Structure formats: structure tokens, C-alpha cells
Image (cartoon, rainbow, N blue to C red):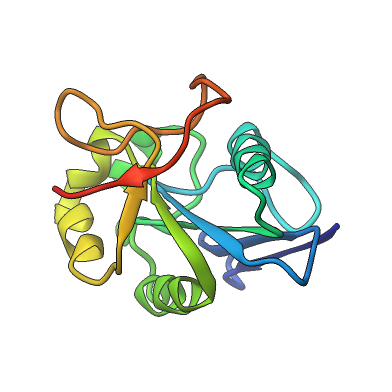
Length: 155
């Protein structure tokens, strides 16, 4: 498997996480809230779960982007950040979307912080999700049924 990540020089922002196991097949883009600890070498729970969904659905790779590029293991850290979006995040998300055959929104209820969910949805073509939360936001893939299939997401 080919693994890569695009991380800022200051290490505070991750703009892209990429896992490719079959170059001949299309890729899935998951858009989460913000990145945690995964990088070009290290996996985290979210990257593992998203890759497993992509494999089960027959895709050849995972692209992982986020509404906010600021790296934090908890949301409190994200909310304290001076620039949680990151200076290159919108460009990175556009590039990832151009490569993806399927876009899965997975940012949960906190995606409405700074209205980032609305900004992203305005730019996404044919967004999907695994589950829709009661609040209407797309659910995060952790701790969800492995049998879930992506469904069209409209806010």
C-alpha cells in the first residue's frame, strides 16, 4: 500500500492523507472535521475505518481531508486554534475532490463551527454520507456498522 500525507512545515496542519492499495481503481474521499495523529506512516482509528469502508465498497484508495486542517486529538484544541481551517485547506479539498469518484461527508455536528460545513457543501459535487445525525449533520464513521453504504447527503 502506498501511504502519503501533506502536512504543513510547522506540523500544525494536515491537508491530505492518502492510502492507495490498487492504482487501477477509483478513490473515495472522506471529509472529516479535523485531523488527528495519522500521517504518512502512522494510522489512527479514523484512517483505518475509512480505508476499510473504501475497500469493502470496491475502491482502490482512500483520500482523507477535513473541514479544518488543524491537527488536534480533541475538539477543544481545534476551537482554541487561531486559524483552525489552515491557509491551504480549501485548495487541498478542491484537489482531493477532483481525484475522487465518491465524496463522503463525515464531520459530525461540530462541522457547523465557523460555518465550515456550509462553505464545503457549496463546493462539493454530489456529496454522500454514511449516516445522518438527528441534527442533520453527516455522522463520523467510527463505531458504525461495517455494512453501511454511502447515501446522498443534502443539508
